[in-house]
Image 1 (cartoon, rainbow, N blue to C red):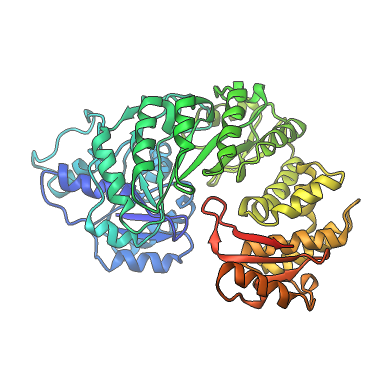
Image 2 (cartoon, rainbow, N blue to C red):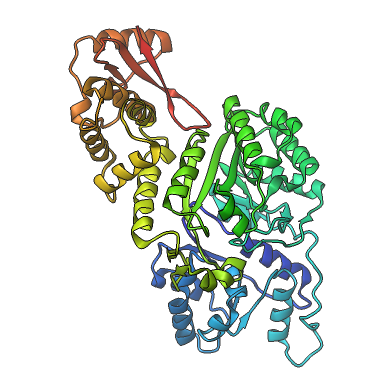
Length: 527
């Protein structure tokens, strides 16, 4: 089985669940080997990982992030192993079967593969015998088999781990592949056992892939309570609907150890016609209220999402959504672009709506009656700057200062940064220098105060290492500040962990105190 992940830090849940399912449900034995690669590896490297097992069947887990790479890999596999059988599954294959059958696949599995893959393998192994049943009467998966074997943990090696505790989604968002499917909640006690097993595996982050984890409030509460009570340093990541939290659950979440829980709340838009057009049901006021409550506690990392390109939302309306989302002060504001996925309702409506999108994965919007090519380029600049600053917890006090004193609103500031300052392949210190130079040209920005904020942020981000030359100072009082700081912390500090602000105040980073929610180092001002 072949999984090609987006990054090395990611792991694949699907191939391990399917491997365990083959062992449980197949009627004859199959020797299953798992290969996990990444899209950043060359095709040659990926092929060598597969070919060393001399497979007769290669089953591939197919998603938008790896689909573009697969036709060449399949073609090479079939040239090197002429008798090999290619089976494809996953959402990018299930909803686009004809394409893959025309591009080298021998079989494409639609939907859930826990039963169908074992049956296909049995049929391939003994096509003329009665060792496999018909494939059109497969039962629904009520609880997937446990994929968390010793081999899984050995391969995981501390990377991000995934777990599924329910399947399906009760909502009908037109851009989503899970829209309107029946939700099946897997038995909760085995789920707890798996969560505990993962929490002891050495991984740092466990991501629950449930589409809307808190759609069942009582069950969500029970699992939140269990996870909060675990003795572990793991962080657990959930995709949630912010408007569905009740007061009891919010109170429980406020008791979680800092950094134990991350929440990803997809808002998508604050423009009601766009939400209505995509049949997305959200109480925006309730979502805002709950997000403010979650942020106030300071113990949970909160990620909110917007999608640019939804029907009827033009550039001005998107700016309004952006400013309303930014005002929530979540730790991450993800600006994504509409993707017209195979199998989604919105893809089927795209032509009638006049939405033009790329014909290659990830099928991103090119333009629409509401967003022009130029509009989307503006949004790309905003997204780029947002990703390199705010969303990485970089230059936060600098951004806050500039927004406070200049005439810029957040959207305009990030657009101006994105279109003015290149960051691709640019060293962080050089990027900081460019930001500093640009900000000094803005109205009402005081260079000395800006420098102080930049020094503060640099200490909190990287403990002062490799600070840009223009921010450094040779103030003789640094040794005095260091003496005070070392006495307070009870240990020696590096020279670059201590600075003197333009006001004459000392400032230092505590490299042994890092916020588990933001990832920033503690910074103190010595008066």
